[in-house]
Image (tube, rainbow, N blue to C red; front, side, top):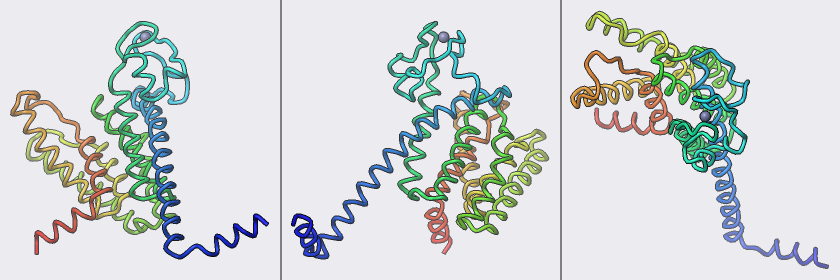
Length: 284
Ligand SMILES: [Zn+2]
């Protein structure tokens, strides 16, 4: 009897009500996806911290577990919870009281926000999963380049074929576009490096930058790799001039270019189409 009644009820629902409830279900799913992506990003960000710390030393990123950088104490699982562990400890090691760098929660929050932005913008599908891996690579490259002025091949060399494989599976960008992006990205940095070296008699960009741009091109295609590069040059040049003018840096300091390329790629990924449209409208 009850079942019959509910069947009748469903059938009697009018079209607008149905579409409203469908919309409601979709928005609940979006909220769940958003929360899930932030938590996933925080946890993955915690692992990226390990990669940033250990990859330049050639250490395993799996073993041993996390340790305090000053006293070597093994960090307990509950102190290792992203962001929360840092806040509960007041930013200090439980063993020696040494300061834990702000870098750790920063990388975790940054990764959480990138995951959230990706899932909100592109949904949860195969392309998004490839993009999340790509963004993780950019985070690792950025912080290693800031610390050590190197762009680790361990990230970029697997990243290039992964981007090309992603294009074969997702067709966004198309495989041809991804291949062109790889060549354009590498070529742009190579040309600038050769000219800059001739003009300024010093090395400005290295092989690491070439590989990074090839990876960006493989994931984003040739148009967005152009956008990434010009944004990186513009922001990098402005910030360098500002830092030199204010005396924070001297003219001789080498400013790592990887973080600017990574920033350019993130802006291109989320806003590149809009920037290209805006630019063409300016020209017309
Ligand atoms: Zn310690």
